[in-house]
Length: 200
Image (cartoon, rainbow, N blue to C red; front, top):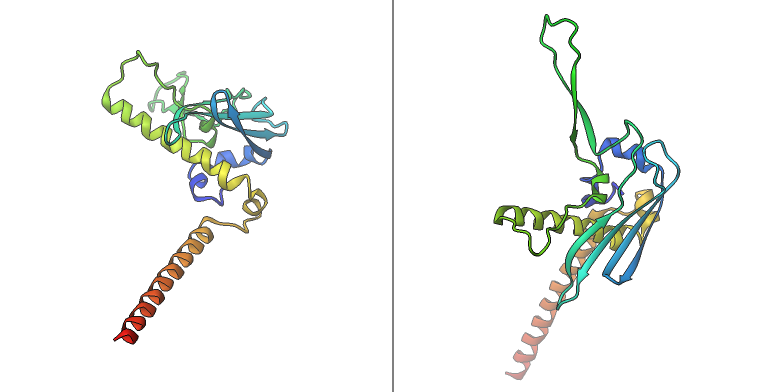
């Protein structure tokens, strides 16, 4: 999955070891609620107990589908293996004796945060403008990742896995087709000019 530019930013070096146990990704359309579901199938591994992690995208059907909320599987991490947290130790002052180091856990970047999307407040809950914009940005980014997995990764999984397919190749093809389109338009203009000259 790291061959894809969007997903590469989400996968940390710590995640890579856990993702070696990923054996398949599937998606299916949902009717009630409307939307789609991603399924990540894992072999038994030392990081978490789940062998299936899911992510659902619930959509509101309007002129264009609008993301209402996303729901992910709660990961059952094994002790000391939570990749979405890091252990921080507070330095002990020099000269201090018999003082135990203070430790605490803090959230950290990880692909597996994908399965813990932000909670969307209920209609009657108040939320200030800045937090609402931040939530919208996070949801849009989350939906972009889910859509990329559904539309690009799953249909061509083998090519992504072997590294035969990269985002740059897709963009280059698109640019080339765009250039061809411009050339065709220029040709049409030339032909039109010739017709005008003949008419004269």
